[in-house]
Length: 313
Length: 303
Image 1 (cartoon, rainbow over the protein chains, first blue to last red):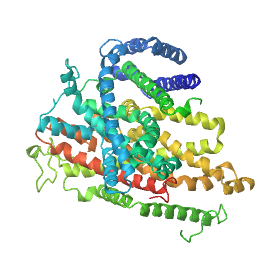
Image 2 (spheres, chains in turn orange, red):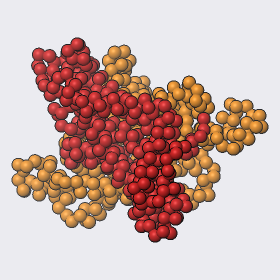
Image 3 (tube, chains in turn cyan, brown):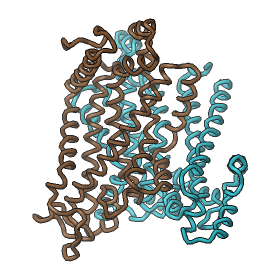
Image 4 (cartoon, each protein chain N blue to C red):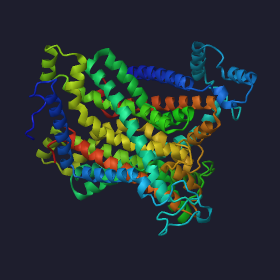
């Protein structure tokens, strides 16, 4: 087991370095001098030079690279051009709100998606199966902002069940849950659509296995076969694919946060884009990279937990 | 099975071979369509939208950019089927014209990603070894990065225009096509006819382009329709965030962005473009999903 963990950890480190390198170059390769973009055409050469120095763009590229990498690992991610505060502080400030939202959505998505997918597979090619498949396909056709606008319209404006603006700063548990409910439902339903499909096809795969036929031949009750022999094996692809869907989850969380006006990484990145806050953008890409690498590592390790066969790999 | 000559029975490298390859591809897709009838519904919906978009200059009841202050925020009526927006512009006409932007960006970006991604995956699978490992690791890393964020940053830096949106979306869609193309390539390259071609001294390019590509194309094309759905969704999302083709050009995402501001009293501003996006994305998903089930070898001949 420890060999497996070490190997995955090593691989995660390499991936992290590779993506950080890509992030470094994306910010620098794209046309347009950040200093000039920020200050505009009218700016004097002097002020452009001063800003370039402040952003660390006046030193040769290899030195910038070393400074960038060291900064990432030492927790110095630069200073926001807009607020003048450290980028890492601004990010850590809103990160809990985003993590809260995505975790709630994942839980909701799994709670709806896994049973629905399993049920659909067991009832293959019957009316319930067709209905679930169509509904899940429709669910993943929704751009997150469209479903968010519709939910907001129905439940906050027409029915007035939830606040139109979720502050994400509620103090009591009840307030926080009330703030979280609609955004989490929006994101959770979309995730449920993805998870249903994965769970369904994973379950179908398992149902076709020899050992399921053997179990059936032995006369074991249908429900017992599903519960004891199939569910655990269905979970393996579900966990992997949910890990792969992190990108979709993050993208949709950005849109959800914007529509519900909820503090989080989404609003931070859009603000940074509008203000051309380059250090902040770079910091956002670093945090997203970290999240992706950490979740992928977590997925790989969870794998090992669910599937005992992987231990010696 | 159709009676047309299969690519494996005709002398490779001839016109007849090419025709046979195309015919096999066509009949393969047709069979896939008939296996899963929902694909036809998806195709029908999509073609309808595409025709409406093409015909927009002739069928749109009003000029999509024509402002009329006296008729602003009018609810749906006989004159304005879907109502008017805050500038008094006809929403139906703007949706028809907006379809052109969505479809062009979706189609072109995915075609670019399909060509580049398939080439990368084909080469990685064909050559194998260290080249394969390095290329596919890179693709996996890119795949892990949230595509909306990548698109957001690329468009923000290049500036919002149709070309830049196409570049940004194509960039994010290359890795999945590389993965999709690689998997069947590894299987196909071990077949006897590839071996035969190799012993005849065919070049790598000829083997890959003429003999492997036609066999992996159905899978790639099916993924193309699913990814076009994603591309249209991403384009609309970027426009909603404010990074779409600049106003006053009509884009669906941009219309929802404007409509969202007055959703309290004029819901139709955001509702109709939302439905338009939903119809197109759903149609493409229906099309691709049905075809994928039909051509997936693991599901073939079952149920």
